[in-house]
Length: 628
Image 1: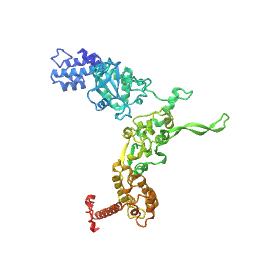
Image 2: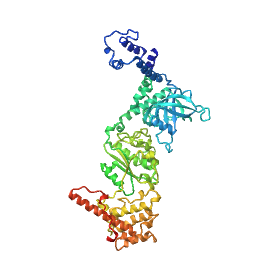
Image 3: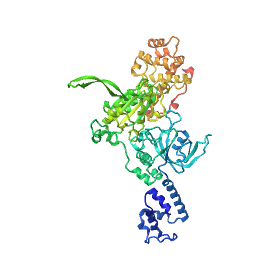
């Protein structure tokens, strides 16, 4: 019994005598234990919590209670008997281990270890980091510190790789963090620096994937994890003793970045920091919520930019709260964020006069400008629009800003980055962490797959809310129903038949979605002018969409594009009939007739109050050839 009390004392911090007094208070109500106890009329005076336990379990058999107590004591004994000065940090890069951790498998085998066997003892605590190169296709997890476990099977299987030094261990997970914690997350916790595989690295990590952690380092790591994820508190208290957790809850040394001018005291600099730059102390409630990362994609001309305008730009009150940028193959990180450039500035001379001199200063790019505006106007919705996202090397252009795209529920960035140029421009403090505020939305557009200049990896894409803009030709709209110059065929009928033929002709050459004519590929002005239509639409179909199958669309391919455009512009009748195959032109006529019939039926249904029938039911039987 005394040993059991010692276990509880070590874990919960209460003395042996306290637990003995609790026991003595109940002895009076149990005749079988041979101890008299404290004479009292009822258990009411013992305490509400203890009485509740007594009332719940008083009728259980003694054997059952003893077994339950043995299990409870054994659980706490495993934790309180740990040597917290002999903790281990373990880094795993094997996909099977990473997947086992993330799926919270009960027991996980770690192999390929050959050092620190004396520290990987039974029940010892292991701080588990998932490694891996994001550029590796097998790494589908976020690298970083992810879990705390304990050893359930000490080193075994020595020599399983034909070398005696290699062995395995089995671990059991005690807590898995909701998200991976990178080294940057531990920057403010000085005691966590140089924690092997976890904290900021001032000295090289060991080449072997196992390292030691001191007591104070473990406290710092747990404190940082607890500050980041308060919801794991109960799990941590089950892993570590009260003494350890009291250390975690106690004062912790954290670093505060302060810019100190020459001749200024540290105290004065700190006061200046606390009393200036109020925007950094604002809470999420101070901001207007308008935060998403949205990526519209679809064929050229399907209405991506129109969707951006209608759904996002229309909500912006002031033009300075909106920045638009277009990515292209030569666009770089420096163009997007900003760069140090020579600028002419007036400088005072010793005699008090001014002269212009060349100075090198940071010139902010579109991202830094809109970030500055968003923080300075926290009650206004701010918008960064990126057109043609995949025309540039988007992951390279974003650089470390990529990390900011992970958002909290309030719209702010989950993780901060450190960039002295951005911090100085936005916060006037080079050491201030950078995050996206809740009032800044980033909206991007891109065309579909085959014509991409650069591909985007899954890790980058998943940080965006992807939304496909369908290429929908609605014959109720004036633009779709608008007839082509000097033609009986509407833009909608022309584009749909051409797209259908395009998919047939190019079916063996991969996806043709990105080559389709979008509903807004041609503007109203293009549809009013025969020359503009020919130079824009017919030229595109000849040079690109039907490059490998022009004979499937055009009636005369022998004399080149110029002859096609001349025939179209100089046609006496319908110019489409002059340049397209007769069967293609006939399909367009049929599409026009179908649209007219459907419009007439819908008009009739509106008058009668009936629901319109499905297209399949509205489609009339084909007219026999001899009755046409």
